Amino acid sequence: MAAPTKGNITQNSATPGANFRSINHTQNTGNNRFLILFLTMSNGKSYTSATYGGNAMEFEYTIERSGLSSRMAVFTLVDPPTGSNALRVNFNNTVYTPLSFYAQSFTDCGGFGAEVKTGGGPNPRTGNITVEQDSLIMVTSTSNGVNQTVQIPTGTNVTRTNHNINKRVAVGAISATGHDAGAISVTATTNNVSLTLDRVEIKGLSSSGGVENNFFMIM
Image (cartoon, rainbow, N blue to C red):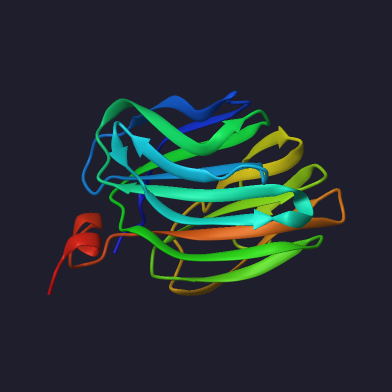
């Protein structure tokens, strides 16, 4: 197996002022392409769908953080079109509060794997995620205070993007290299008393093929 190749990133924090938000993102060329989109906004509205280059994205999960008055979501797309295309998310009504928007492309990728959603709790916030060989881990953390670190694995700080959307969002933290198979501990810290810790697995390539095979092979 091999770890996924990290590609282009698009990130933005803005108020849509409409029932959708659209921003261009450039997908890298290569085999076994994959695109993941992380969103956080007020829990007063809901996400309904997302598209990239007009292609419907898979709705992996959404979760309401009532204690932090926020709603998170993750969308993915297997084999997205290459080049610059519109990445659009739709809402159930006009959104007048800020939206945290983070997208990352991959090639040589086995797709979306395990995901663990941990609600607000003591700082620092630590939790495991069990991954396959050579997978990457991405983490999103939300709090009322400044997000200080994200560690993947615990003890190893990695870069991330901080958005201030009324709540503080640390998004896009990703493993430096692929992990050995098994349970990996990750940690986030803040200068406040509570924060969330959501983590997802970006799978490497299996010996039987890439992302297309992992999602579409019928036995």
